[in-house]
Length: 281
Image 1 (spheres, rainbow, N blue to C red):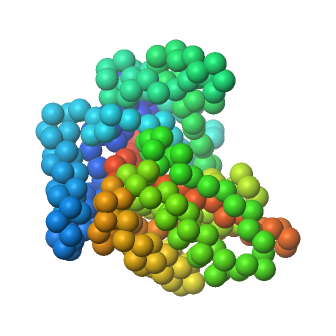
Image 2 (cartoon, helix red, strand yellow; image 1 turned 180 degrees about the vertical axis):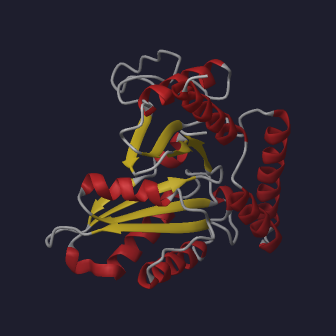
Image 3 (spheres, rainbow, N blue to C red; image 1 turned 90 degrees about the vertical axis):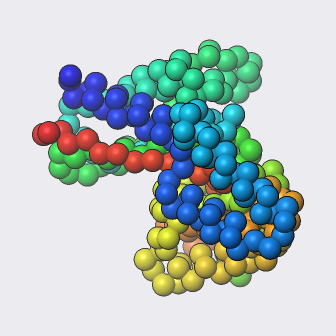
């Protein structure tokens, strides 16, 4: 088997895994939330979510009818004889054909659907340069319910940290039950408009227990999570303590006259998985 084919297999297996299972940290957070809820409706919703996960895992079927748009992240040495874009395309096409992905991808204007989840700039692939013979791949599936709640706000710099907190909590409150809470929220701060949203998405790749390394950002994550859960939206927006399983923040330096803030929502089905390929192995 060629090295390129091995990479395609890795991508395909990650798509199958993300479609039919959740990361352990997300499942554990849902179990903890179910035990901590007092509202009977909230507990019933969380139990239904956990039962849905169990059935999907046992039967090897998608755990949500909206299998989302696949996002691929590669960390690799650019000198390696590999084409991550082609590997991702072939994996997506095959996963769609085998029923692990619903054919969601359409032309934005004509809405024409080719039926294979391929198209201009789709699947989305991001490649990060690093040295060595190990290739790391992460796949994230983002459904439309949560993606449609995403926001980019060019906040006035004088609003500062308090302004960021207010707009984040307001955005979650306005989203209500649309993103299928309990959510995981990625917050990208700084850079330009494009980088801000990229940071929000990248933050979602961090496991739930992993807080930001910088103390001020760690405190911001913790405070935002508490404020959001105090909203009382609860699972599916029907009330309860658990609106949010976690908040992840990333930042970049920005223009002195700008303060971009981007929000990237994940529903309870926070489908991400990673694997590595040893080129020399």
